[in-house]
Picture 1 (cartoon, rainbow, N blue to C red):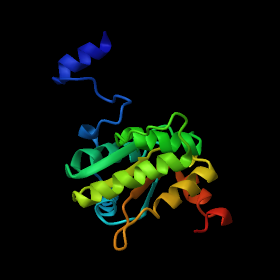
Picture 2: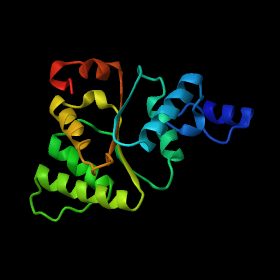
Picture 3: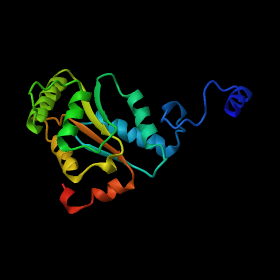
Picture 4: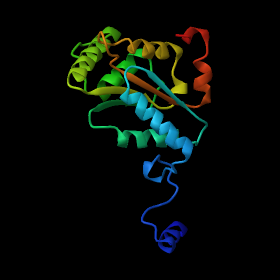
Length: 183
């Protein structure tokens, strides 16, 4: 009842302070603007891993949603929101997000990677750019992070074919410093 009263009193058209990361309500501070610019540049560049970290509630997911709204139509995105996955589940999720159909009855990592590589080559030939965005990336297992790094090896003689964006809390930065992930 009180909420309805406040909405009427202040002339609001919807509930304020929703928990969903609505980019319409992002306060674009200088740091948010800089983060968005770096993400845009990284995705529109060729072949890299882009890292965005920040504390809980700092707007990382909302900046990500803002990014998705601003990317050109020639950009294909695989958005992974639940990174607590095995390697094969991650590859399956990426392929599903990109609309890649794998015809094998019991697909292996190789089947998914081959399908992804074919898709990336075709997209590149059509002038399209492809990125995988993983939110809450601090929850990725080390083996999955290594597989993601290996996906950056999908390339032509002159171009990397995949951009990977890792968005997470500061623990992600610490995790990436361990010797097993030095590459």
